Image 1: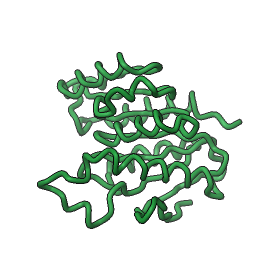
Image 2: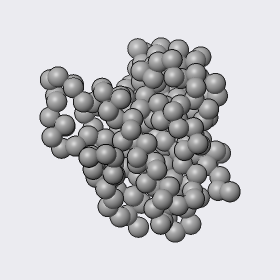
Image 3: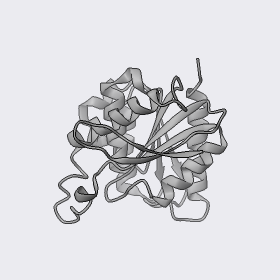
Length: 213
């Protein structure tokens, strides 16, 4: 069942969609990339597959509607200090929600959202059990990568060469991480079968590390 939720973060109240199978064994909170939203078809496809694996999912908007118009300035979508507290609030909220309370939490970050997810894991390690990055920019988390305790999976397209190099650098800085490449895939994983491979890897990772007490 999917229920709308409002993420309370100071004066900001982004909207989200929480879907929780009756027998959920964990919950995955999505952090979308720059220029995207909770309606991202790629993230929604991944979320549906995770739900089939008995994982609840929360897709929510990191930006308010009036902040989504920064196409030229990129003022908000790369402001990690603005976005990180919002993701923390989202995680805290799913930990309190009636349908997901007590479940272990994983984060799924895409593009710049991966950096936000890793900053949350670094700053609030008690909240996060695992992280998956899809075509992410973990390098944007900087020196805080070394503080991330949660097992982290970095998924990158083989042909996304610049991002692959940045992920390899981040992999070396993280304490507990693994990097997997999707053959012939580019940044958006639009090639046949590429997104399905992302979903398989992510599902395996969360199944391994999101285990109820």
